[in-house]
Length: 118
Image (cartoon, rainbow, N blue to C red; front, top):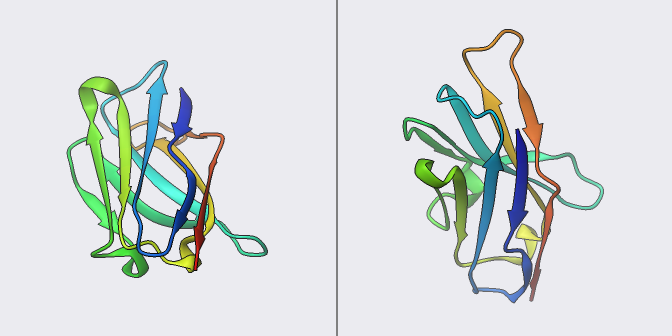
């Protein structure tokens, strides 16, 4: 599976961005897709995830501001980011992983830079 992320950019605090990640290849239904981010000098952290069946998870720091969604017909996951803060500045990565395979399969997109100015 290959992932192509897009939608990053520079935005002022309080603004919005929408990230997109398109998956291609041998996609199976028992999967989840998610967004992670990595700020300079920090570890990569989960932002939000969604299973193929629609179960979502958002970390506390983005709840009420970010929303993950999927279009399974298009094999695409989105991250709508509102009320952006300077601390949201990071490289954002999408990830695809499976549940039903052994070993678990996972792959990452190339990352897209999000910069929020104060």
